[in-house]
Image 1 (tube, rainbow, N blue to C red):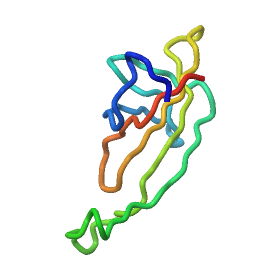
Image 2 (cartoon, rainbow, N blue to C red):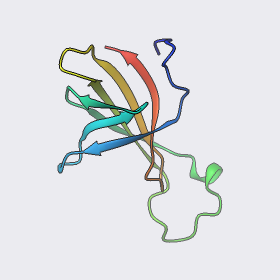
Image 3 (cartoon, rainbow, N blue to C red):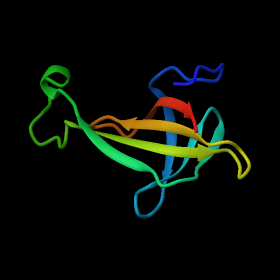
Length: 103
């Protein structure tokens, strides 16, 4: 991660706007709208639910899949690209900004 004064601490809450197809369109971070400027990359990791969610009631839903997106964003058409890594934990609607890198 690039160390800059505006670099967030890991797990900073952000708002993400999606297209109708379900891909990220823009990210609201630090009171600014960052437009997605390249094809985003999506993947999933697994949570150790037996360690973190011991009391999950039966039928709650998916408690193991952690959704991730890597998006290249910019503030304007002439702004440099930055890469945001986003994460949404199981059973949560809140997106978290995990990392910011240049380019």
